[in-house]
Image (tube, rainbow, N blue to C red; front, top):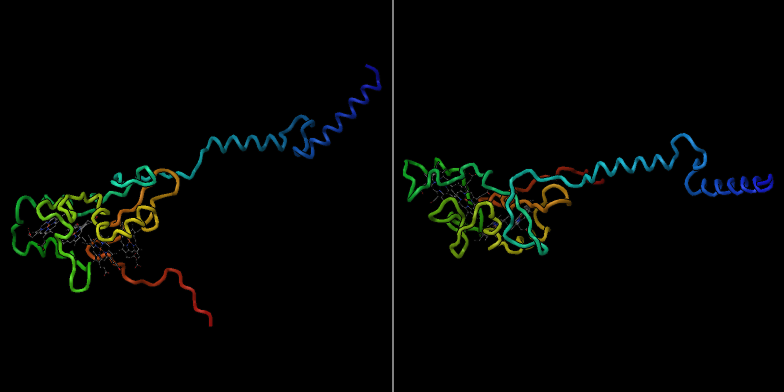
Length: 208
Ligand code: HEC
Ligand code: HEC
Ligand code: HEC
Ligand code: HEC
């Protein structure tokens, strides 16, 4: 190799460096010291190790809904653990529970304000007349307390249809992971299901 070819090789190397510097942000041929590109690569590795953060598992007890959702299944928040007087059979064995003023003492707090004015629903429109540990549908079949959306859905079929699709009610946690939704009775008190009117939490003063 003579001096001339060496000089040519040197020039083309310089050109290559100049072109690369524009694309990769300088320092490829510099050698030694962490380059900009290496910095990015190192960062990418860390992100991958951390994994996605969008999934937040639901830790509250759930049941699988008895209805399909987009060809698959979904879960609903369970209720029995939230019902103070469950299991009802701890008092209601067979027949009537007999003691003085018993109904008032045990269920005096249950005020039914549900249905059309002057034609409110009665206890056994919803509760099973013999098996107090269960609800009852209009055909006389038992409904588990965890699946009370089936009870409500008989009359409020539009809200139930919206709830199935996600337009009424609320999903627990984030959009990713398993679909878990609030039960009707997580939000509504079945005995007095209307929400009392209330003032907005954030209030904008009207413009003058
Ligand atoms: C601490 C005891 C006790 C528990 C627990 C209990 N009950 Fe009762 N319940 C009574 C008594 C006492 C009466 C009145 C006598 C009767 O009807 O047997 C009554 C009556 C009822 C009635 C009939 C009310 C009426 O107006 O005729 C319903 C419905 C009822 N209970 C539902 C339930 C349900 C549902 C549960 C569980 C979530 C439950 N009870 C748990 C004691 C209890
Ligand atoms: C519209 C349907 C409906 C009617 C009408 C109704 N209930 Fe209920 N009741 C329910 C459902 C559903 C639950 C379970 C609520 C939940 O998931 O927390 C319940 C819960 C209860 C409980 C347990 C509450 C607790 O927190 O311990 C008692 C007691 C009870 N009902 C008694 C009665 C009595 C007595 C009547 C009549 C005076 C009555 N219910 C009328 C649907 C109804
Ligand atoms: C047997 C039929 C029946 C069942 C079962 C039933 N409801 Fe109702 N519900 C009614 C009727 C009737 C009204 C009054 C509607 C009206 O006035 O237009 C009503 C009213 C309501 C309202 C108030 C609606 C409004 O316009 O303000 C809510 C909320 C509600 N129900 C929720 C529930 C929930 C939650 C359940 C299940 C725990 C349930 N209902 C079960 C018949 C039923
Ligand atoms: C995340 C809480 C939540 C869940 C779950 C929920 N609801 Fe509601 N529901 C509401 C709110 C909030 C309103 C509006 C109340 C108002 O306008 O005063 C409402 C309104 C209603 C009404 C009144 C009519 C209307 O559409 O505004 C009915 C009936 C009703 N819900 C039934 C149901 C039934 C049946 C289910 C279960 C299949 C259910 N809800 C589940 C929060 C909920």
